[in-house]
Length: 230
Ligand SMILES: [Zn+2]
Image (tube, rainbow, N blue to C red):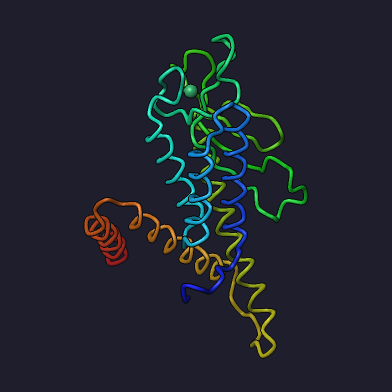
């Protein structure tokens, strides 16, 4: 891509940009609006638009904001983003919130919607007993660690399924396509490979020690190889 090419506005990019908009709106509602903060969000949108991993870049920028504003949480909770609207008022009304991960792209029918499948760490009051919370039905139930594990397992299967289905769709749309003969297992294996390589790319991009990450991945593959030969 040349410097002047306009990046493709993928659903992932749109979702990440929508999250930045929501974060900025929440900060504004909390009375944190400032020229510096507005400039930060503008820069965040620019970096996310250029990124190969919009969701990852957005999460990293949210962490940067939190770190740079160290102490932004009026109660000094170090994992809190410091921007939930109800930090003011009586201690019992304080809500501490971690970075929220949610899906909020153009695939939602209602653009004003908060997004779906939102997940974060949150605590009321003194913030010493954070819980995992998940919004999937409009409710925000606390999750037990076992439920969080189940959610992660289901979310991965869901993501692989989305990749498998879109890949199959793309094949079907090719005018000169040969008949699609892959089994469901073969389709899901190809999709899981795509998810895995993207995940490895993110791991290497985020790691402070890329070489060590590559060694760890190679060790994992060697282990798989040995298991196959055993
Ligand atoms: Zn807080």
